[in-house]
Image (cartoon, rainbow, N blue to C red; front, side):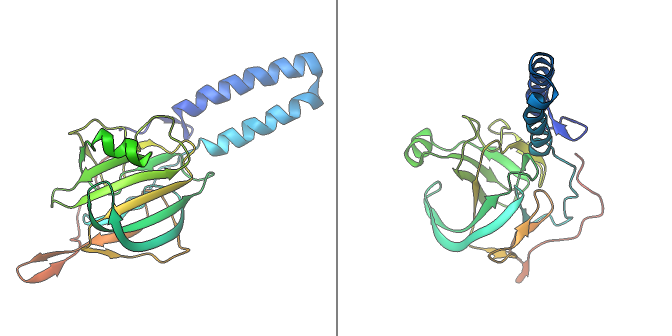
Length: 222
């Protein structure tokens, strides 16, 4: 998903701002300046809500990147109901005035979760499999995406690590399920930034040694 912003405001935000601007002119013409002030306040709030500035993705290929701006609320080993496995789960309380676009926590391929599983759990979720075979789930457990998946890339398409892949809309909490070989890098209460903060590193054994991430010389293109 390519970033589509104008003045760091996402496209759907401009629809809302255009409607509010029209309402502002109408209220000002009919009822006067003071009556239009609340509408002006809504415009200011919408500008903050729909903004999304570029982020520098860490050069760590095996890192799990924060998908959203927010605060780490839960960190524990638990059962992953999406992939029927034991996993590490990090829950992030969403900062509603943070970045509007969701970022992919890892580079990999988007896979389709069974419709029955999503219906049973009543959540919106995206399943990503990395080139190393690690499987991650990004799920919205509280709030609403209005029928959208967290990552709107098509099934079978690739997503880049820390790259924009969807919109948070009214999501209030995002869960990231990762394999048990992940080494968590955050603590409860930590503030994280979408596309910039490292949540964990996926550890793999290579020639008898553990490998978590290798340096890269070139940035991943947008």
